[in-house]
Image (cartoon, rainbow, N blue to C red; front, side, top):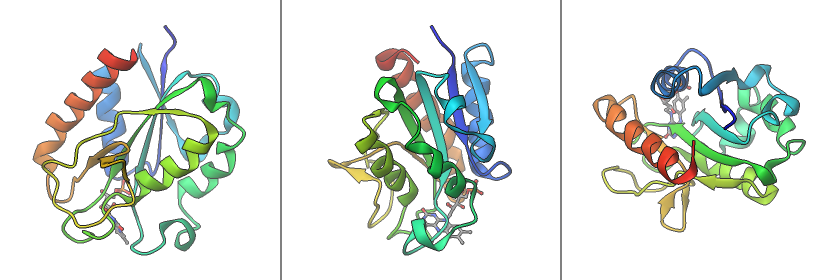
Length: 174
Ligand SMILES: Cc1cc2nc3c(=O)[nH]c(=O)nc-3n(C[C@H](O)[C@H](O)[C@H](O)COP(=O)(O)O)c2cc1C
């Protein structure tokens, strides 16, 4: 079985903290960490199981308002990757209290980019237990990835992350 590639950004905040936690749980034999800002398509193509970590920074139009994030560079490489044979799981950091109309929108932004490229996107999560009004991350009634809120519910992160990773391991052979 090939290794899992974890691609994340930015490095220093909550997204980076969770990326390190994931590799701690999966083990370095099983997973590699990559900063999205240092990656191109050839690196992603080495993996058939991929975890992507992103945060939502922006209240109205995340995509166009922030042209200086790690992900803005990385997204230019997305179309060059052979996603058809990859199983992809997304985790996203957000803040339900201060941004209840845009909770973890970036998960949805990423899903919209990868779905047309035929990636097999897994690890959807129920809305139960979250407090928000709107989210672009909702696809067919579920989050298209794992939402985490380190700003308000850091005590729930461990349980949410463990359950999500267990599902990826059991159902999708991560
Ligand atoms: C300027 C700014 C805008 C934000 N906009 C959103 C948002 O629209 N939706 C959301 O869920 N969280 C939003 N957040 C919260 C961040 O996503 C959250 O703090 C996250 O943990 C940041 O992770 P990072 O430090 O790894 O980037 C915003 C935070 C900042 C500072």
